[in-house]
View 1 (cartoon, rainbow, N blue to C red):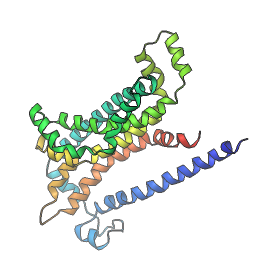
View 2: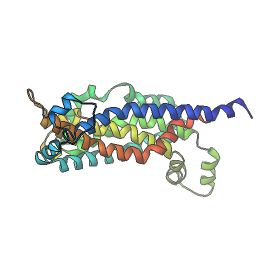
View 3: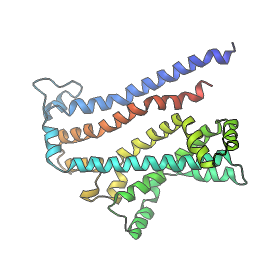
View 4: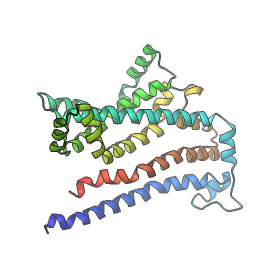
Length: 280
């Protein structure tokens, strides 16, 4: 047995330990947010690290959140924007990655570099131009504006990740599909996509979290009551001089739950996608 084969389980274990440690570090602030959302105001500041006790337990934050603002609508808007944007990012990102990895042509590298520029240049730098374009198109205060921006924001990373995975798909498999009469679309959807599912889950997670938690573009492009996202809606409890911390923590706790559920759903594929390079 080669040294490389013997060290693969060790590498995999180290990667899993690193992921577990990172998860614990990332979850601890979430844990603090959730436990403090069930306390009264005095307990939040007096003992923020303690779990709620019968004397400090309070649901006033959740009562305020459900009584002020239309948070059901805010959650619906965030869900629609996030799901549609992720679908478009995965679809167009995977198609572009397949074309770049499968078809060799003059300028292939330059096209790939051009598509990856979005990773290096933050899309927020173009906020003014984006806003002007949305105003000209009549898309201000619509969910479509947010979906378009987030799709453009996520595609560069999707292409960068998926193109590397698609290069590892066997050419013999794709050529066998062509011999059997499959079209390029059938090869892409039926043969290639199932094999890069872990990478798709990785892209979905990395795309989902910034979209769900974003405040900047909802504030700029869709600040109307009918198009507010849950992150923007939570700001109604933050004032210039007074902040309702019970309501803020309750709103953030409710906003965290969908992300945790989706993370649990994609976690297995996510770990497979991240660790695939360590076990080869």
